[in-house]
Image 1 (cartoon, rainbow, N blue to C red):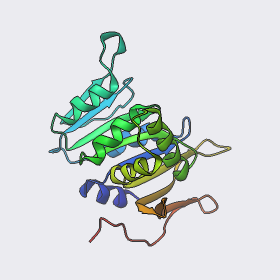
Image 2: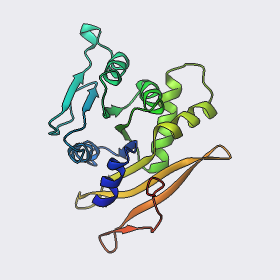
Image 3: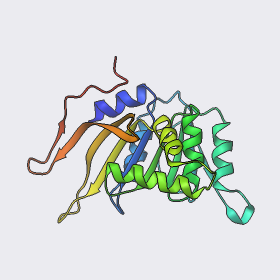
Image 4: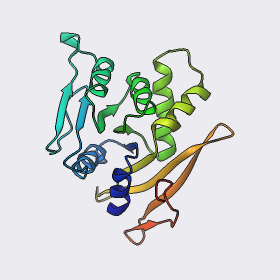
Length: 206
């Protein structure tokens, strides 16, 4: 699994990390960022400062509505700071549209979202983008999401012991008949307590 993530980092693959409350998605995002080569520039943009990672070329930007520093404006500013990686804190509203626009325009990014599954993560992303009310239809938003996101990682807090596990890693390969085409690359087998690769070759691996 680590090799898969590192190969995605090396190929500058856009990543969406999904999971429920206390599933560890922010913690996992921190660890992914720490795998980014030290020579690459990382700009983190958040509504509230929650990301806690160590990287020698990291810049942290935090929105502040009381000072009229809005998250959408901050994402635009961050994208203009020549980042190799733009890391955006958890998406939970209309700001998702601006994040997808920036990622779709070629800025490699990592972000997180509250969701119960890989499919639910993409559905929630659509709903948040629609909240921006820019007049785009669902088909346009789905096209943008497939341009902005390549790898979807789902994490769960398992019952009854509360262990936090990556339960599925899937590659978003585009749309077919208006529906997302997801290629599972890894899933967690609770019966054997093991990560199992599906054998599918990631699209970024030549």
